[in-house]
Length: 345
Image (tube, rainbow, N blue to C red; front, top):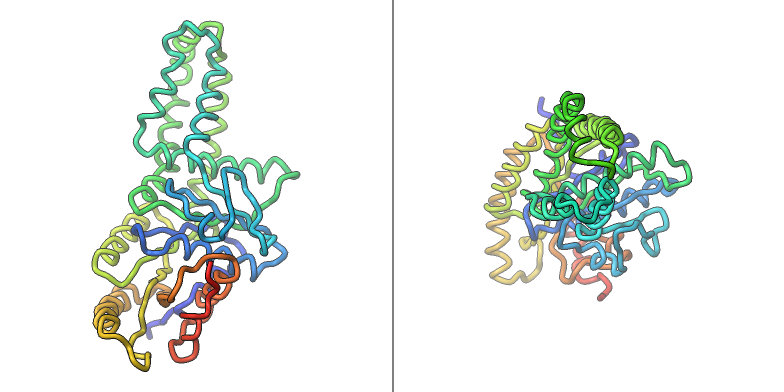
């Protein structure tokens, strides 16, 4: 007998062991609203624990979603004290990285001095790499510094699909790369001494690489552990979004990441309205067609159906109202009042 999974995210919200939750999908499908809703429900369900929501999308939207300014440092959400948000700033993080690199070379006349700046500025996927460094920092802080806030779960509001997949490839890629560096460290040491002159300590650099390799390996193990990490796909009920979702799920499975939840946003449920407009009826017919395909294709997934509301979902109070449908399926007959009941922001 086939086991039909609940069309909710209750299993994620209630799970005690999760450390990392990634929320991703095609651009414009409501990733920020979904990640914010998941974070809000986690904070409400576990009031004694602290949670962190991080935006790794270069086009940040968390500040807009919560009607509160966030930056590169974690800041508590007003009205929900056990939830904090931050938006990773690639430019600021890049400056910090370049300053750290230059401590190994204090010679102002060295032509290699500006190489780090030119090199890092041209690397494809550098935004994802900097986001990954933020993950490493949080792992290190939680393990070594008891004075900092310990977050039970960190939720990622990710960039559109391509950026996200590059980000999730980094642990395995970096682990292999750093392993090769370590195997060559003995041979490279004398050469680094010659290149670095008196400005740096190659052994110190290799020591840091060794520490980084261990951290990256730990992240790689955590990201592929379904008890610690899961990925929530977000889409809308249209062909291109469904196609992108399937591509992403196949990629995630190849990375051995846990993915068993899909949130479908912007559904009209027009057949349950008293006098639906013709456009809504036509569009709902199209949405149902793709919903049926999703139900067949992802029968062993939690398929969560979220309604299209009459206004933007902004502010903590509106997010609380909307996010409850992640735990209790939206009923168009009983819950339709929410379509017009949200506060204007």
